[in-house]
Length: 68
Image (tube, rainbow, N blue to C red; front, side, top):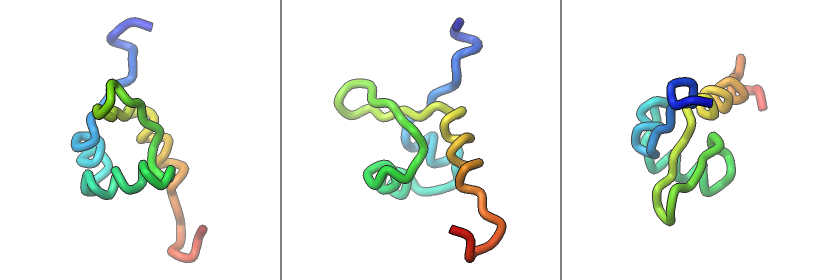
């Protein structure tokens, strides 16, 4: 896989903006294991692939507020 075909990665603040939520909400989802897949680069840097965010958003789709 070359660099051009590799999925784009976003830091937490960028990923939160991409989704439309606060970075703290994304961090809470990550801690609970309810958010999109992520990777750690070093001790503190968390990155999300846009493809993983898109997959998570698709899996989270609902058609009613009573859907679980």
